[in-house]
Structures are given as structure tokens and as C-alpha cells.
Image (cartoon, one colour):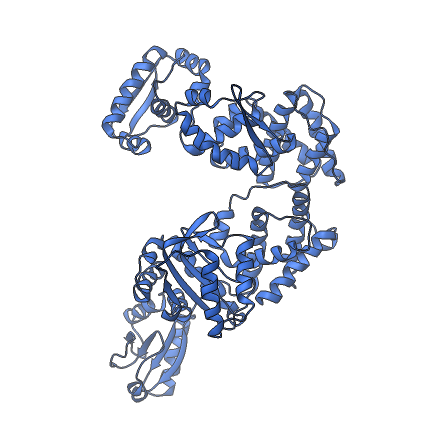
Length: 637
């Protein structure tokens, strides 16, 4: 057995077991100097010399584990597996702590775990705050008894659900984590179970997604361990399910019983049935789907979106069929409080904020009249369906096409010829007006994006491209450079942002105080009505409007504004926004007249997020400096 004198050596050995790493990378990973890395490598080699292995530096590649005596090295791995499985980060320690509490039949002492993982008891005590918060989501608690340690308390159903959700989350990031292969589950169980599940579902004609199959695989592995260790489910009763789901559950129970080594109760089989039904996918025509709550919810969502956002999706048969199929299994999940992780949730909220808000508002409104509580994960899945429907029917990816002024002094026929040639080459340009040279010279300023002329012109604040009636390739290339510039985001900024709706807060303020300051001003100016302020407060109460990176987008439920405007707030001292802090706040007031452009407005903020612009925006002293930073970001994005 090999004992490491400190945690860093254990982590260093673990890192080099599976990959070759240069010393610069190791120094960055462990926040030490390259000299310290070399010292640690020497210490590791001293430990490994009796176990048939050593770490060798290869020029151009890095340190690599070389095994000289495979037998002695295998004996090392077998004799001390626990010492080689050491959580390296705070997140890994939280995962390990959760796994220990969820699988241990006895009380745990932090002192013992601290010694095993080469950290201080104070470090684990700090990690326990997140552990308790995670367990609290499942109504599980950890109680401490002097001299005995800490023990988990809660229902068996909650323990299994929590453990399966945890392992699912871990599997998304690392399929070979020791928590999956050695700590939480019986060794080799996932490999054994996977083909059994697939054959069972194929025989019973039960279709599940890859994510659904992965979750059910983990749940079955968890169930085998818990049943085998004497922790069965004893009092679960569920509504009836389809015959094929019932058959699949029965066949799986027959396969799992020998593995668990104990009989599987009817309650276990009922819970397995519900888990399969909750993750089943169906391909049926709308007329073949049992409506009940599903049809009511779909009708309500589509009707709400039409009434409050002016997007009419009610006649989209494909969207309705997709929603009915999804909502039917969703209702099963929410009824039995089965949570399916949504690994794309963060991306959905950040990159599809308009579709997210439309769907969230509709589901939250329906929730007032429903006994069910629909989680953000479930709403995220619905957003994908609604987003596709919006893309099919509306220009949700709003683009401002280049606006062109055409100046020609050689007659109408030449103008028409040039215009036709331009539209063939660049069909998305918009020729706003056609002027003679005299009319152009009388203009004080040009509103279009640029000018195309057959003669040289004086400069009037916009780019001018001179071209002949039969343009050369070079002239067309110069026009193309102007045509292909994305003017959508700068145009949206110019249209909806202004100095009159910009403020830098020089004093501490809370969220409600901010809304109380801004909303009445917008009401006095005629941008919104009296219903806007309470709707903004209600929307914020549903779920935080923090987009990410300290940027918040508070807004109303529905498009309640009379005229669209964005009120920009910079808060150098920060404003508490749910569990996080907002530094740059954009209060959105969007009218139904601008619903076609609404997605374009949201895209501005996604660009700020993608460009990591919040710190630069926050440091702006006035609207001019804010606009300069914003335009730079929007031009790059």
C-alpha cells in the first residue's frame, strides 16, 4: 500500500495516470511553480520505485507514467483503491460527500474523510453547506450526534432520486468517474445492465431518448444496490400505465432480482413503471393522444402566447403534435415529482431568451390554476419546441437589411438597370430612394446606410461607392464590403437606447427600489401603463431575470409597453438579484407593435454576454462612454 504525504501528490499521481502532461500545464493546474512540480515528481518517483512504475519526462510531450513491472503496479492499484480516488476540487468533494452520505449505512465523521482526502476538517465543513443545500432539494437532512458523527435522514424514494440525479449529472461530464464505477454503484453494474435495458425496451416497443435511457440505467443500478443492502421501497402506489410500459417494468424486475439477491416488491415495480413512463417518447398523431391535462396545457400555452405576445402558433399542427407528445410524459413526471436534468438549460436561457420568456410566462400563468409545479428543467424542454415554432412562422432572427440610396444622373433606364443588377447580386439590400445629382446635393444628411452613385459626390456623413453603369468586379467587391456589414445590432441599439433612459446608481439600492424608481418614470413619459410595474415585480418573483455574468433583464409578463424602450442601469456597487448580483441592468419595455423585432432586442444582450462585456459596461461614466463600449461589442458580435 502506498500513502501520499499530502493531497497535491495524490492529485498529481491521479492526473498523470491517464495522460501525459507538460510541467507548465501541471504548474497551472496545481497553482505552483515549475520548480515545485519537479520536486513533487521526484517525491512521487521515490514512492513509486517499490511498485514497478516511474514518471518519465519526454521532451516535447511532458511527464508520462511508465510501468516497468505490471504485476507490482497492478497490486498497488488493487491494494489501495480508496487512496487513489481522491477528490481534487471543491465540486468533486461535494460529489464525494453526497455519495458517501447517500450510500452509507453508518454515521460519517469529517475527521476520517479529511484524513482520507488529504484536506482539513475546516475545508470539508465549508463544503457541507453546499451538500446540505443539495440534499434539501429532496427533503433530505444530515443530523450530527456527538461522538457518533453525521448521518443522513429522509425517505428511501428521496435518497434514490437524489443519488440517481447526482450520478446523472456526474456522468454528463465524466463517464469514467470513480463515483460511477466504484463508489456509488457495484463494480461493472452499468456495463452489465445496459444491454439488458436495451433488449427489454426493444422487445416491449418502448422508445426512450438517449438521455432517458442513461437515467433509467443509473436508476436501475442504484436500485440494485439499495435493495441488496436492505433498503427497499415499501409504500409507493401509482396510476396505471400503458401495457408496453407495464411489460417492460415486469421484465426488468425479473432481470434485476438475481442481481439484488432479494425479492423486488410491487412498490419497487410501480416506481420503476412510473420512471419508464416519465421518460418515454412517442410518435403519434395528435388525434391518437389522450388529451386530458396535456391538451388543456398545450391549448393554454399557445393561447397565452398569442394574446400576450402577438405570436400566433395555434394553427401549427406540427408544433401542437410535438407539444402534446412531450407534455403527456411531462405531466407524469410533475405528478410524481420526477426530475429530469436538462443539461442545456443554461444555454437555452442565455441564447434563446425571448423564447424562454414567452414560454415561462405562459407556463407560470397556467400554473396558478394547476396543482402541478413545473420546474425550470421542464420549461427548458418546452422552450425548444416553442422556439422552433417561432422560427417557422416569424422572423424571430430579425435582421435589418442594408438601406441604400442610389444616385444617377443619366436617365431612368440606367437607374433601373443598375438597380436590377444590384438586386441580382445582393438580393437583401433595400433601395430606399433614387435621386439625381441635384437632389442629392440639396440633402442636408443621408438617412440610408450608404450611397451608390454613377458620379463622384460630396461627403454627407455616409459612405459613397462610385460605380459605372456596367460595374467592374472591383466596384462590386467594394459594394459587397458595405452590403455584408451586419447593421442589425447597431441599428437596434440606436433605435431603443438613449441618454434619457440611462442612469448610473451612486448609492446602494435593492431590486424593488430600482423598479419603483424606473417604472413610474416610464409611465409618466407614456411608454407604459399602470399595469407595467406590478407585472415586472410578478415576473421577477417567478424566476430571476439574471441572464448571466452580472447582466439582468427585468421585464413584464407579456408585451405591455405602449412604445418600446430599454432603460439602462449601471450599478457599480451591485444590486442583489436573487442569489446573485447584478451590475448592469436593462429594464425592457416592449410593445406589441415591435414584436417582430423583439428577438433582435434580446440578441443585443446575448452579444454583451458572449463578448464578456459586463465589466467594461459597468465602468462607463456616462451614456456616451457606455455607447462606445456597446457599439464595439455589437460590431464584433
